[in-house]
Image (cartoon, rainbow, N blue to C red):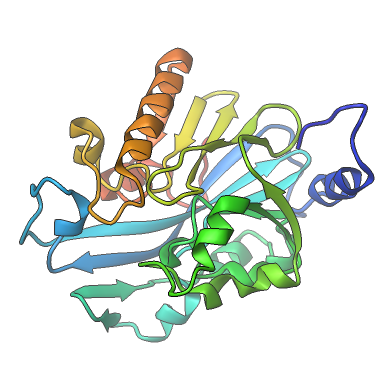
Length: 283
């Protein structure tokens, strides 16, 4: 959040929520980025991930991570995965259209592994509201939800847009919310920034984290699904707006060049494997 002299009372209340220490395990003096395994999706046909035909008829797999950012002022959860309900079937679940969903270990179990309950997470934010990013959202109704207004309006459309299950994020109705339109400074010091990057969906966003040792890291959301999509600027066939997608790509890549930052393609198995395995972290 942006700390200014003219902060409204409501913003001050939100600051109090975010600034409450969330992790009792140890004292956090610098920012840490944890990567959690929140599922996997296997596809019989990856064709939807490019509107120019490169993947047509080809099988593939994407990982579904969640990210915990621990900050001296609180804890942010970025994206909430497929949903712990998929862990009930160890063999996974087949969905229409050739999708196979699986969750090896629940998000709740992973948080518990380092002494954290769902109520200890001070804020939750979403790259967008496709169900593989909102699956566990309702576990965190005690947290402040940072929500892009355009994204919520689109996701609540009738009929529901492709890939959206509004029941997975219905908790926004009772949770404390911070509604945003543009870029957003989560902790008020520029270290954790939600950056507007529409195109995949109307309110799609990426997350920029400035780490002391690692430097700038940007979590892609679904700006890209694979490393090749980044390399060749491929646009998924189901994106909301192609031109906005390419404009967002231009913006994010320019930020990365200017900051000498590292981009994590969230769904790419190689990028996922390159991150420290939980409970290790980047700092």
